[in-house]
Image 1 (cartoon, rainbow, N blue to C red):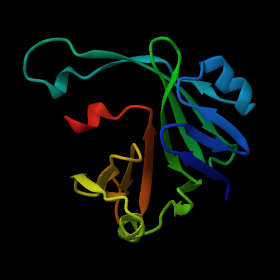
Image 2: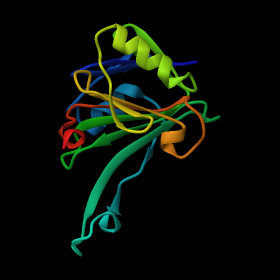
Image 3: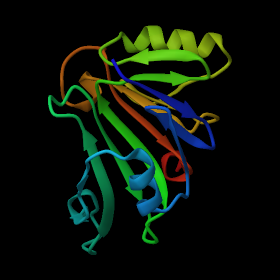
Image 4: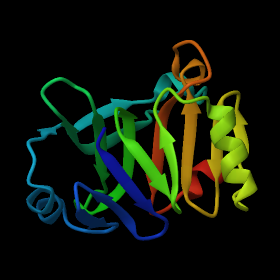
Length: 165
């Protein structure tokens, strides 16, 4: 299984290549040297608001995966095409401060490990946990629409203010 090392407040290392927050999209693409799919689109979130206003956002992201989809992740960019977020959906072993998180591993065991190392998780909603100092969230399969307590989602970002509101 391939590894991704998440480096809080800096970025991540994937396949031996360091990627830093606020790097330009073209630099990230060139640095990773892997095939990707550009998935820029407009997303209408109006159904989640009751004010009758339009709530459309521009989503700018690249989708990375291998041929067998044994891993997949998204890199999200701001309006200036600078890297701001990482979303991992499957297949990678994720290292955070030397601790491994494997997809499908019991999320409660991951929480205990993280809490024992001084990284207290806050439950945002059932099965979805925020580690504010690390600027990451993790979520179980059940929290993402599946079944069970296995790790199904990892999110890391340069800025998590939108999660604290």
